[in-house]
Image (cartoon, rainbow, N blue to C red; front, side):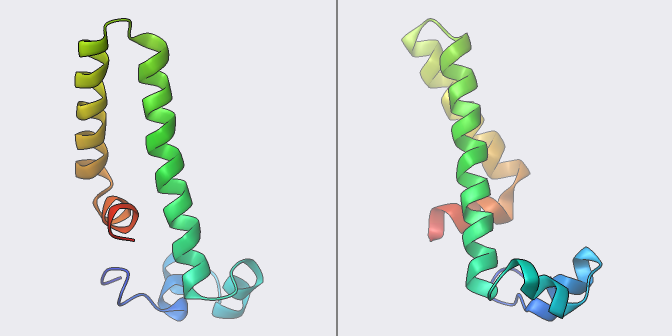
Length: 87
């Protein structure tokens, strides 16, 4: 797939191994797919921040760990990161 702008329901269906009509059983349209991906990205980053808050006592260490978590998310989940922070 060529980024989110180039995403088509047919191409997405092929990429995940289903037919386009099957994909429409789960998502009404492309926007619904992007909304779902956005929410999953936000949840993943929020879960990581919650883990950091629960395991870090120092405010400075917590801030540094959160910055590292944000960077790690940006580097390992580039497409989702762009979707979350450009939407």
